[in-house]
Amino acid sequence: MTNKNSAPTMKDVAKEAGVALGTVSKVVNGIPVGKEYQKKVEAAIEKLDYRVNSYAKGLKANRTYTIAFLVPDTINPFFGTLAFYVNRELAKNGYRMLLCSTQASPEMEQSLLDMAQQNRVDGIICLSYNENLQIKEDTRLVTIDRHLSVLAPCVASDNLAGGQLAVRKLAELGCRRLLHLSIGSVLPNEAAKRRDGFLSACVSLNLDYDMLCLTDGTPYSIFYDYLKEHIRDGRFSFDGIFCGTDHLAVQIIKSLEELGIRVPKDVQVIGFDGMRDYATGQYLCSTIVQPIEQIAQASVELVLSQNVSQAPSLVCLPVTYANGGTTRE
Image (cartoon, rainbow, N blue to C red; front, side, top):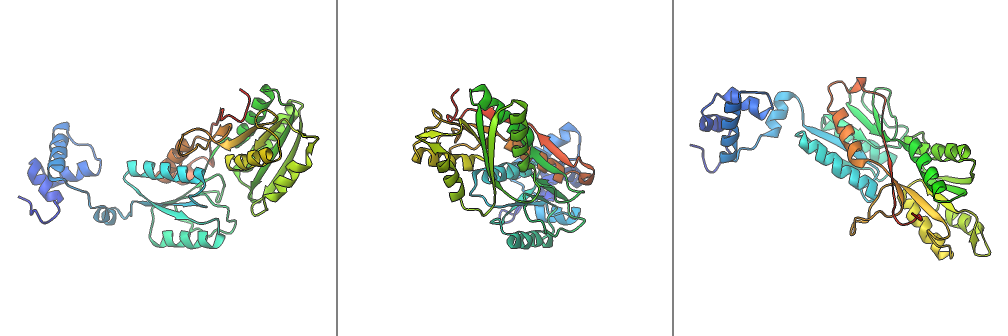
């Protein structure tokens, strides 16, 4: 009989189930046993409300069952949604997530990374734009959207195909003069391929186009001034816009409307990411949808893999298009 004032132990479960302690250990650790034994152990666990001591389990296995997840912030809906799915996938596998919001600061990013390594996390999933990030060689690392090491696989959506898809959709909807607007890191990253996809598709379809690609930290007023300069007698110079992110697309749409240009009547706009309004669940704009849940699943599967260093250098996942009301479907 267990002490009501103390948590039940594995020995208590074994006694209640009428099986050996080793059998309980196997069931708890996911090692196959006979179906009859497994049913007895599971029934005893439920009856006693037994909880696995993850700390003791970690000491025995030389693990912490913790994975650090580094993101620039959690205010951006894309990063926040990604964190949700990464946490859910880790929990399914018996792991905890150590969430590190770096505020896009290289110094804070390095500090949080050092802290995670000092706490002996079992691996790191990282969305970083710090070219000088120092990571221990034996760290189990998976990156999202940017390659940090030849030994660390990178998970990303098919950004090149996404840019091409946006152009084809705008052309299908009657657009003939396109504009690409984006803002991002100067460092090489997978997201920059959205611009490459836009360019290649415009050339292939023989469409007139222009691009304004700014770097992080550049004031938004440059975009606003550009839009204003391309309005003549109440008409906008372009009939289709592809923005590098939904966040930028929403800002551009607001600016156009302030300048008297109607979306989608005067100009059609497509963003990238697939972000939804929190209250309604509707897409913020017509968009190229990233498979965020699948990105999280692939990242977790890789970081928990025993042979992560032998994984493909890039895991590229397909994107889709969704109408969010800023195109004339």
